[in-house]
Structures are given as structure tokens and as C-alpha cells.
Image (cartoon, rainbow, N blue to C red; front, side, top):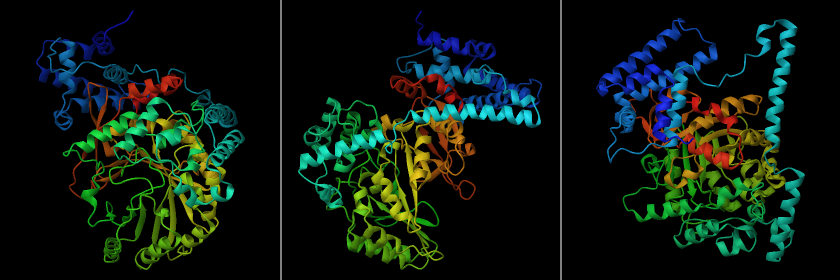
Length: 598
């Protein structure tokens, strides 16, 4: 039997008779609010006073659900979210919908169901009995626990082996064939292939050329054509093209394709946004944190210097896609006058001791240009660390020549100044022998290489990011940050619920040794900077919208230092995210705890 969404909502509320009786009563809305608050407070008192004894993990889960429910009922939350969670439920339960009342969604009903289950201590998270070793002692307990841990490790390893690896014999062989096919198409040898300038001269910029070498879906082809027609940056290096599956079977290159092939809805949204004069594409509000052209500053001791706003290819979700004119654009460098002014600005501020040189990709400069830039920044006495942000080890490893490595690393002076490379691997299929060799050129000179991962739909399956962390460490890259995907409208298909990132950290990354799970998971708050997601005290859920999307209030990093504003953010629907995973063949039972991460 198929039930309507309203029937499903009633069933979800009925899980807890006391909540159901209050919501279905004829009381005024504010009286319902007060009684729900009283019930939730008494529930919290009962479990904290231990008058309602439950097992420790269930106690924590129930406490968290009660806190969230209470927060959803607050008038302040309603004001910030511009939506009344209570009013919406009340209208639907009591047949008071109007033409302006948004319809129910499966996502909203799912959120309510799991929230009520959490409040009522009726979740199925801990369906199994506690591990046997908890009742044992000494060697017997240790032996039993070791067996328990082995089972956990074996399961995680099996899931990790499920994900393709660019260093596997199978993929190395497939990519070698791809490379040979591209070389034949262009009539070149390894001599040209190993020259980074050949790759930049032959960046694939249109759908027809690309379709000659790899299969494209109709949507992929149309999206690229539309992007070029509307001057939306698109390009792919021949090297990165060799990482794609030419047959487009979806067996191993889904994440790689997602990096460079824009979805149709992305291009459509970008086109409409650009046509709207009132729409700002500056999601991160860099205009509000740029005191001088070429500089972004959000923190006390570090600044971003952007001397070049182009890359050999553009990540679809790039936060600066609104600033980038085209791939490998000749007009993307900051003028000498503006660059000099930006460097002088840094020199005049002795409190700044770290400079992140990024863009764009500064390694598109010639060796001589880069040497000159580094010399000018290194000449500032109070700068003790220079970071270089680049994706060339991933997209154009041929750029990392011995000469370039020497140019950069000669500014690395232990005890005086540190040079750090920040790169951006998104998936294990991007880790290749060429990428590893590029990384090792810096490591041999004592320069650390760190990775910033953007957690997207395309690397968010169970243990997918764990597999990446493990392989990164093996090639000499240290996981540094994992970013929640920016909440930009045009990149909705890439976004992942915050709850999934929290779940990944607790149930997957936590199984790795501490030497591997070194990355910090963050939400980059527009204008304000990074919010550390592991610290739950720095955010609150303030609403659940009719479409099933959670609304968060994020706190600024300066919240105990200055009277700053908070930031209200609408997440993506957990229900819709899980539906997409199911279409990929994922077992949703593996993700069932996601609802209880707040």
C-alpha cells in the first residue's frame, strides 16, 4: 500500500504519543510551542537525572535529538531561518494548508521521522547488543576486543578496495593506452608529451575536439557547447584527458569527469546568474575581504596573494569561477603596478608572517617569473612561511620539472623560512605515477606537500575519502583540510549534507591511524572564514525546511574575541543525497546513522 506524504507525516509524529497529542490538539500555536518545550525539557531532565536509565550511547543520541528539537521551536530560530517549523507542521497535521503553504516532501517527512525516533529513544542505530569484551577482563577481554577490531578493519579494507586506484596495474595500463591514443591523434612522441608547454598549447577547449577522443553523453556535449557559447571557462589538459575512461562506462572516472565536465544545470545557472545584474557570483564575499587588489585577508597572520587568475583547467566548483575569464588565459596576470602595490601592502604590515600565493595557479608562470615573485615575497623579513597553492601535480605534472623544483625550494631555509606546497587531489584515480613523481621532487628538498580536499558527491561514498587519504600519504602528501562544498546554487549536484561529512569523520576516517587522518574538516563561511565542523559548539541547526533541507547558524571564529555576525546556511537534503547514492548501487543501510549527525 502506498501512503501519502501527509499520512507518512502523521505516522512519524505518532511514534511519540505525547508529541502527537500536543500537535493534533485544538490548542493555539503558542500554547503548543510551550507544551512541546515543557515535554522536551522534562525528557531532558529525566535522562540527565537518570530517572529514565538508558545505555550511554543511546543517552547521548537522545540528548542531542532533544536539543535539536528544542532549537527548532525557538522564535529566534524561526526569525533567522525566515520559516516557522512548528507552524508548518501544525498546518499540515490539522488541515490548515493554504495556497501559499509549501507542499510536503519526502525529505521533510524523513527528517521528522528520525528526529522523533531520536527524541523517543526508538532509533535502530544500536540494534545489536554491546560487544562481548565489555563484560570481560584482562587478557580475555583484550583477545575478544582484538577480534572485534579485526572484523572492523577487514570490513573497512574491503570497502576501500572497492574504489579505483590510479596506482593499480589495471589503471596504469589503461591510462598508458589512453596516452598513446592521444599521442597518435596529435602526432607527437614522449618528447612533446613530457613538455608542459605542449599541454598548455593543446588544452582541449571545445566539445567537438573532446568527443573525438572520449565518449560524451548528450548532456555533457551540450553543456560544454553552452559553456563556450556563454564564455564560461572550460578546458582540459591532454594529460588529464588521459585519466578519463574513453568509453565512458562509469567504471572508474566518475570523479575525474565531474572535476572538469560541467553539468548542464551548472552552465544554465551560471548563464542566468551572469545575465542578472543584481546577482553576485562572489559567494565567499572576497570583495569584502580584499583591502587591495590581489590580496584577500580573513585572518590575523596570513594573507592570500593572487598574482594570476587562471589555471590549466578549471574545477567546476571553483569558488573563484566568477573571476576566471578562461583556462590558461593570457590576460589573467595581475599588472606589475598592482602586484607591486600588493607586495608593498604586505611589507608594510609586520604582523603578517605567512603568505599563500594562489589564484588561479601560480605555477603557470615561467620559472623566471615565479623566481622573481618568490624573491620579492621572501625579501619581506617578517614573512616566515610561503605557501604555494597549485593543482598542477594533479592536472599537469609535467610542469613540475627539476628546474622548477630547484627554483621554488631554494627559498626553503630551515630555521628562517618555510616553503609549503598546497595541492588538491580529489580522488584516488587522480593519483598516478606522474603525480607521485611530481610530489617527490619537492619532498626530496624537504618541502612539505599538503592536500586540500573538497568533499563532493563524487568522492563521498563509504570509505572513498579514506582511500584517498591512505594513498596520499603513500606518495608523500599530507591531508590538510577537507572542505564542505561551497553552497553555491550552480554546484548543487556537487554538494553533500554536512551530516555526511560528520559521519565520514566519525565512522570512517576515525578508523585510520592518526598519521593519516590529519585533515581538519571545515565549512568555509562567506566573509568570515573557516568553521571547524568537529567542534559542534560552533554551529546550531535552526530549522528544517519543507524540502527537507536543514538550516544551520554558523558562528564566526572570532566569537569569543569580537562582536561578529553569524551566518545562516541552507544545506542540501539528506533524503535526496541518499537517493542519488542508491542510484549508484550503494547500500543505504550503510548510511543509516547519517540522520543523527547534527
